Image 1 (cartoon, rainbow, N blue to C red):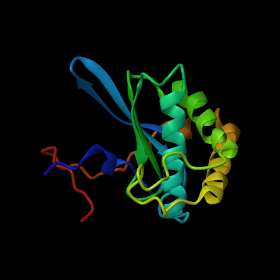
Image 2: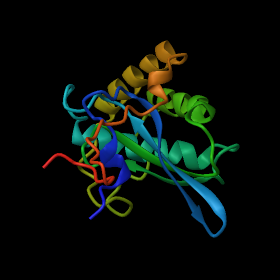
Image 3: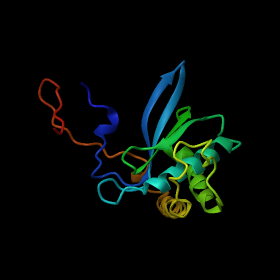
Image 4: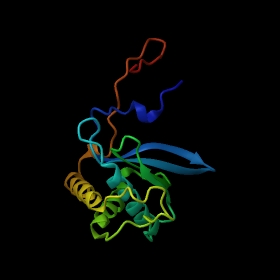
Length: 174
């Protein structure tokens, strides 16, 4: 089996930021999946599950209601490793082009008085939310983005170096 592209990212070197995970053509239209990495993998603790769930609800609601972007948003959801989110948008924009949108989205969490869609009728685990921790993570990430806006490492994946044989085969971690 081929190693999927996201596993070729060097997770020992990645820093929080906004990265292109993949681009696909769907019905002749480019669709881009962004890796919105909030914490540093394997170094910082994973994001609290209840806070991650609240961030998913709040930011998905923000993105799907932003007048300039709502028609471009396909998906916003958490990574299984709980270090960030995936954002899927129509089009092939560079991470720098969605920087302001994501900065506004994370800053908007501070104004949340409740978690949208957190009732039993709307949510599959409505008791698993933590608005205060979501606000803490969002403020921390927004501040980090603002402080590092000009640094290329928050927009470019560090690739894992892989040994390649003479016949082009790659060795991967076992």
